[in-house]
Length: 273
Ligand code: A3P
Image (tube, helix red, strand yellow):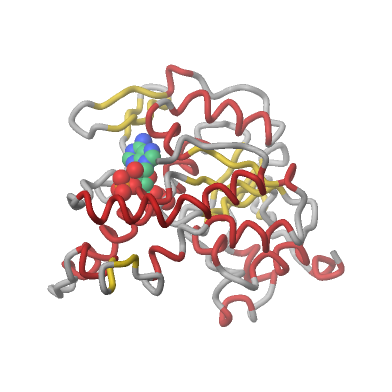
């Protein structure tokens, strides 16, 4: 906390200020972090940083210090919680300790989905990033398999080993400070998941079932805020590549043990394949 002593929480003439975050969505990449942030921002007592800040994971930003970080935060009223999301935090080795050094009692939100779905979503994201630059990205089987076995060096596979990263967070934060949002349920029925998030953040229950409506064209829930309807960006909710049964079986086998270890670590199971 000594780090925080020199921070100026910039004041705006209308009485709002910038604060260090009270809660952080730490990941996981492709878990549904944007959906979670958008849904949370339906709550009047929440102010969110719109873009990913990458303070704790990018060395050149971290070196700029907490004043730089607070300057990236939204202006908010005294009763509002400040929330930022940077999905890469979950899997970056130095981040847990750095977050702890800033605020050891901060609340952390972690949204996870079926590790296999997450791998395919991650692959799809990189595929489209390449496409945008007119570059080709190899087919999914070529990257995920090596000599007929799961290619453990492929980053997207590694990032789905949740137990490994969770262990590092648990070295600094007790389990009751890390709320795990079920990303698969946030897709299929967002409201109950958001009620749990409100409770974890000790927010009054203000998000309602009527804030969500299923959009058949998008195939996902979209948000209704007063009279304003909005869906997430088209890059959220993209079709994944078809995967043959050989690769799918290999993925199931590969993630079986790590998933079990994760369930033991957090004392909770998830409906993953
Ligand atoms: P896909 O595009 O692979 O389906 P992130 O924001 O962390 O990158 O996560 C993106 C994922 O959020 C999407 O992955 C999608 O499945 C999920 N998601 C959850 N709720 C959503 C919603 N209401 N609309 C669109 N995508 C949603």
